[in-house]
Amino acid sequence: NALKVAALLDVGRFKPLPTELTILDVGSGPGTGMFGTLLYLTTLKIPLKLRWILIDQNREALRDAQNLHEELLKHLRSTGVDIQSTVETKVADLSTRFSKILGSTQADLILSLNLLRELPESKRLSLIEMLTRYHLKAHGRYLLIEPALQRTTRDLMEMHDELIRRRSAT
Image (cartoon, rainbow, N blue to C red; front, side, top):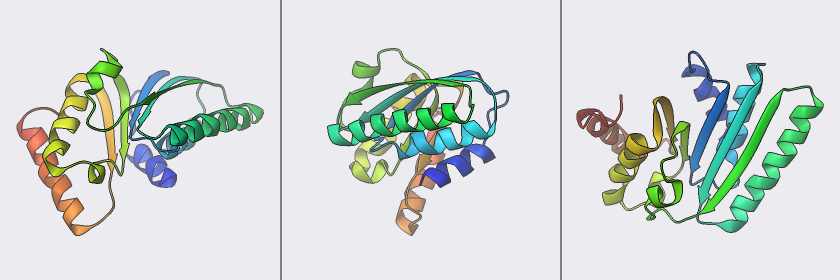
């Protein structure tokens, strides 16, 4: 999944890429999305300042993500990559009102990997719409990855169309 994230970010490049990025990973698990994003960003070979906000209901997974972040940073710095990066972890389940824990924070990039299947179908659109409307910067990107299954794909296409219809995303 980390390689999928890196490849998809490469296709949907930010132009121009801000040198300071806030990245929100909802349902982050052990940091797979963060790892893939770092894989992509280091290929750009530009100095970056990153602020990660990782949200998951599993404290242990967030600890693993924090440890992965520290190991990745050590490795990147040893290879001469000019990157500053901090991680904030927040324990919350997917029914949480994210505005409570995020306040007015807006991200340049929001990641959600295998998140929707964890939610009841009736809550999926409202969560994505709330994140895009209130926590994604105007020129930010939302990368949502779900398993390539027929029903999941159909649900994502319907959600996409509804977000566009409501003008919650472009």
